[in-house]
Structures are given as structure tokens and as C-alpha cells.
Length: 134
Ligand SMILES: CC(C)(COP(=O)(O)OP(=O)(O)OC[C@H]1O[C@@H](n2cnc3c(N)ncnc32)[C@H](O)[C@@H]1OP(=O)(O)O)[C@@H](O)C(=O)NCCC(=O)NCCS
Image (cartoon, rainbow, N blue to C red; front, side, top):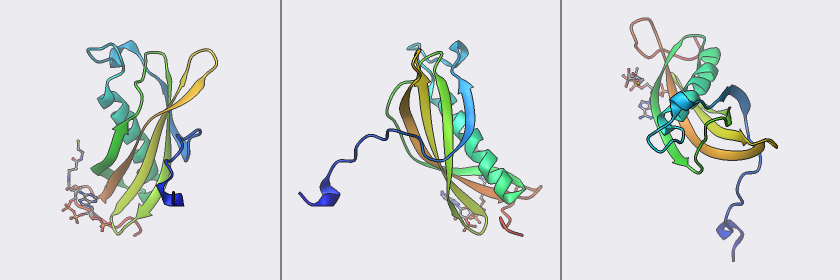
């Protein structure tokens, strides 16, 4: 089998800067009693926005979220960590990869939950795109 056809082993450790750390609470559950995916996405959005704001030193808005797949459920009491990696800076946009991991149980077993690419646009006071580097 050629090398590129080998299946990728599951990620064993997070990549990127730790930008959000929080605990999943009962108020964030869905109808199944697990953590609502929208809550997790909002944590990832907040974490990536911090990176984009710090880089552009301006207001930013989310323009796209790509490639998200939920690999494992999140449970109440899990410690949720979001790790960010800046992938690309365009004229007005910034692409940031965010990995969400949980630490679970007494031994704090690490488990990757999801990953996605969040794109932000630097905007002025009127909400119009403006260059990241002015
Ligand atoms: C984001 C927004 C300001 C962009 O305005 P626009 O007039 O479409 O701007 P442009 O076409 O000049 O695109 C601006 C940048 O975004 C990028 N972009 C636009 N659509 C994109 C998409 N679907 N995916 C990735 N990048 C995108 C462009 O490539 C461009 O990047 P660059 O300047 O680095 O080359 C506007 O679409 C908007 O306000 N959207 C709503 C955002 C929002 O409310 N988000 C929160 C949702 S709750």
C-alpha cells in the first residue's frame, strides 16, 4: 500500500495555543443530556476570535466555518479546551484552525471532540472589511 493510503492514527495530543478553558455545565445540555454542539461551536468561535482580534487589533466578524465533524460527545463536567492555530492571513481575512479537546474523569483522559476552520474578517465601525495590516 502506498504511504499516502495509510489511515491517519487518531490525534493523541492537541495542537495550537490554548485560547479557551472551561467546564461543560448542565445548562449547556441538549435533549439527550449531552452537551449541545452549538455551545461547543460558540466556545470555539470565541477562542478563534481572540486570536483574530489580537492579530488585527480591530473588530472582527465570523464569515465562515469549514470542515467541522463531531468525533465524540461532550459530557457535563468535562473540562473543555480549545486550541488555536493561525493558518492564513489574507488582505482582510484570517483563517484559524481550532481543535476542541476534553479532559474527562478523575485521571483527566484527553479526548479530541472536534476541529474546524473559522474565518474572520477585520471590520471597521460600519461593519465594512478593512485590511488586517494597516
Ligand atoms: C464578513 C463581511 C463583512 C464580508 O463582507 P464582504 O463584502 O462579503 O467582503 P469581501 O467580499 O470583501 O470579503 C472579505 C474577505 O472575506 C473573505 N471571505 C468572504 N466570504 C468568505 C467565505 N465564505 N469563506 C472564506 N472567506 C470568505 C474574502 O475572501 C475576503 O478575504 P481577503 O480580504 O483576505 O481576501 C460580510 O459578509 C458580513 O457582515 N457577514 C456577516 C458576518 C456575521 O454577522 N457573522 C456572525 C454571524 S452570527
